[in-house]
Image (cartoon, rainbow, N blue to C red; front, side, top):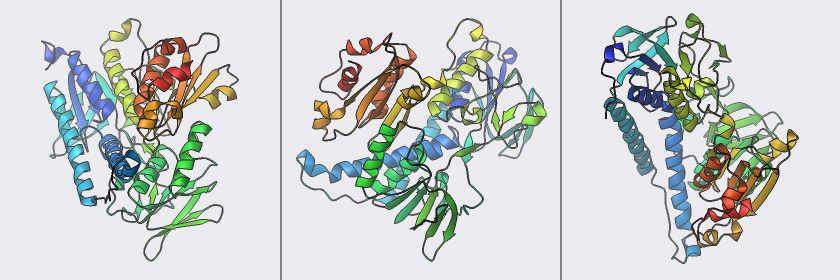
Amino acid sequence: MQHQSASAENARHFVIIGGGPGGTACATHAARLGARVTLIERDLVGGAAHLLDCIPSKAMISTGGAMAMMKDATEMGLAKVDVLLDFDALKRRISDIGERLERTVSELLASQGVRLIEGTGRLVSTSEVEVDARDGHTEILHADVIVLSTGSRPRVPDWAGVDGDRVLTTRDAYPPPELPEHLVVVGSGVTGVEFVHMFNSFGSEVTLIVSRQQVLPAKDPEVAAVLEQSFLDRGVRLYKGARATGIERTGGGVRVLTDDGRVADGSHVLLAIGSIPNSDGLGLDAAGVETDHGYVVIDHNCKSSVPHIYAAGDLSGKLPLSSVASMQGRKIAEHAMGLHSRPHRHIDYDKAASAIFTDPEIADVGVAEADAFAEGRKIRVTKVPFSVSAKALINNDSRGFVKIVSDPATGVVMGGSIVGRHAAELISVLALAVSSNLTVHDLVESLFVHPALAEVLGEAAE
């Protein structure tokens, strides 16, 4: 249902550059609040990072999970089943999901009266955006509010020699041109370990180049240890303490060189070493927008150094999560429409929940145990393994644990980590507790379903 104000011509005009989760959330919310909205998107409505990275990767991981479950059928009391990957069918599945999501977002924008321009936009002043549309026309849009949400792209070092064939970025691998026989993954952060899990599930040999001494260097060491052991049990080779310095094409594959002299040979190599913001060509200097290494510097209202110019999503330099970008988009719409003249809750990035879709899944929120100890903060840490859960035994998967970090004086839940099946879903309970200042007593007093994995949350809160 469209919610434009009666006097659309006099409504505040939002011009949004970038139609990812942040841009589309801002567009629809601002339109519902009575704004006139123009959204400019050059690639995919819904966001390239979202529809070309996040969604395809989770679709591929889901397929790998289904394969693993069927291979383990005998342990669930079923006859052995031989499972083969239909790579062409997987490609069609990923394409279909992306097309459906893009269509859904486009229809939502249209239903709210948002004008969508397929093309590129750049600032030519503090209140004007020049648009080069895909159909060839150019126009200048006068804006009351400008929102920048152009996202990011994979970082590619000079030594990489990416060709989209044997040497791939993440954008080349959802899915890749062919299923790798032996994939060398460079980068052991969130994206890197998801790729390891994904292609190992499909039957590829996998080698992971780990520049530090643990995978997921920014995560809880106990969490990382569980994932590392899972990788080793599945035959993944780990090159710890090795930083990639070069990639060579061999006769039928690739060779990755590292700074300690070790080499990793494979059929393909995939780079998962971070991203860089899509800020070039936006005209930020012309409008006087302050940046830091290409990211737009924002305040607690997502406002840039120019009062009516905002930034959301990866471009803002905050957490590169779709959930964060969407929340930023909503907050920008509310602030620019004057709703934040009354007390409200700012985005607390330290309380954002995140998940890693490996096997086992990993999720966390709020204060991490290691960080708290490093800062000298007094905390109470409780940990319960899933092996005590009847539901975990029913699922034939008792790996992992729930860890809760709380304030020893008040019992307020400060954070938590979950490793195990459905961790990405279960973390929502702890995320609500952290954002709402609930106590461990609140969790203990909650009547969870039995049998359910969530019961371990209550036990960990004891």
